Image (cartoon, rainbow, N blue to C red; front, top):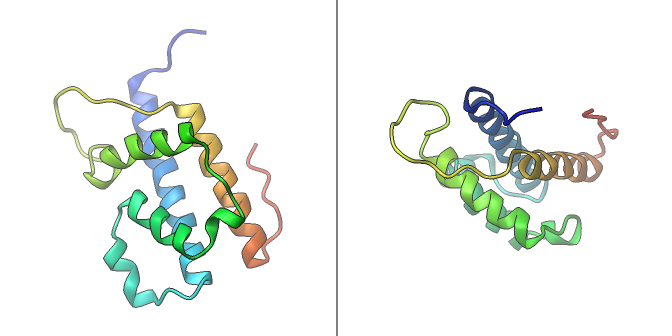
Length: 122
């Protein structure tokens, strides 16, 4: 199997980024963040992760250094909307498999915390 086409990677990364954003925000709401405060986080995945970590996420999910670096890389593209709108120039993409695994672990952790049944995403 050859390399994954950029035409597949970009939409997949956007959707995974959106999943990560929504999972982190669901965790934050579950941990008492007011709905009115969500716009302060915006679409910044690192800011959401920082706030979630401050509210105890790391006791439910520990991210590896590779996962944190992949999230940082994804965040640069995600929060600037470069995965949604065409912007020419060189880009650095995080590993798709690493981001997909991170998104799945995060969804599973948040589902457990808020009392939802386990989702089988495969």
